[in-house]
Image (cartoon, rainbow, N blue to C red):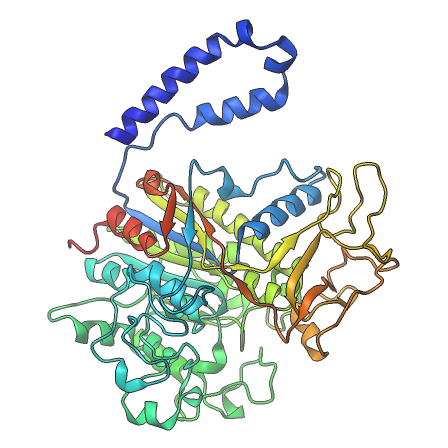
Length: 525
């Protein structure tokens, strides 16, 4: 009540101040479009969200999508639309409720995705590199897993009878999506070939195996449980589900031998045997053929490894759906369950673009992520809580004093129209990285990972004659490393729908679980 009454009091005060504007402010100030727009934006927020319970929850995670990434992406999107850019807003930046989120892991000031996603999906912070296991774990030691497993919001949703879904543009066995369904002493145990012999002999299961057997494993942990398994799973990582045998290659294979599994198992066949009415698909045609009105279970593995960057997607051999397409299809399928649903959507390649030092790829994937959020808002019913956040940030910076509307990927031109230069007379870009591989000039290349073939660049480069807005340009980095790193500053949380009003202030990352739980009443059930 205190929050609501405070909002009402604010509304009254603003109404009074607005009526007195003409007496206090000069007309040119009160009629200024900047003044009027900001006042209207605030007025729009004064109708408080009073609903606390939702039928559905969609958690969007932009992996590595820090605040500087949001700023640059909104500017780029605006400039692609013919605007100056700075005045633009990504779809979820228009949500009424926003908070800052602290991302540290139990043992790390700057976190990794395994620990951060575990916090969001279980309500418990943990160590770097472990998947939905608490901090009483030794990373890589299978014997320390038993008794330290955490229950996830996705598992709770299954137990309650809700429909569930997990989508990622990364490998579906990668840290962020894996935290929703698996328990692992090491995020890298994506298939059995990645595990030490001691872990295999100790009874630990690889992450892909846990995904395929999610239903069986969950029912074994809870007496009397009867669940139907994750309804929609879509992403990359097909290699972790197939045997290391050329005979199992798909027509979308890039490697001579697509599969990595050394136990001879074809987990896609095991999944199809478990769900004979389900749809296993691995390319765009298969995806397009799914009938959302009748589909019950979907497993989509659209790439051998990670799915392609959005800007590079048309180069995929078999074709693969966009994040927006996967999100819309998943909602249409999950919405068939009258009890409601929990859907987790990750844009994993924002993170990978930054690690490769490519602002272009990171930002274009962020824009597609924003498109997916907007499509979800349109497809989902009004009783859906949509949460949009990141797991961590990156050492991606926006520097110099560029003039308004200056290309966000361009060289810095100041407000007088002069090209800015450093102490040695060399021009520099607005976007840059504190560390990483650094400068690359790959022309019109749209795959950021193509830059990994060379050693890290040292020192400044004369970029005077280089088109830094090209898709293949990688920004300079101060500290040469084999890969750019995460950053430790807070990230943002944007919320819309029932329960969104609880996203406020500066939050611990594990509190996001409690927003989901509060909206769906998971633990109490």
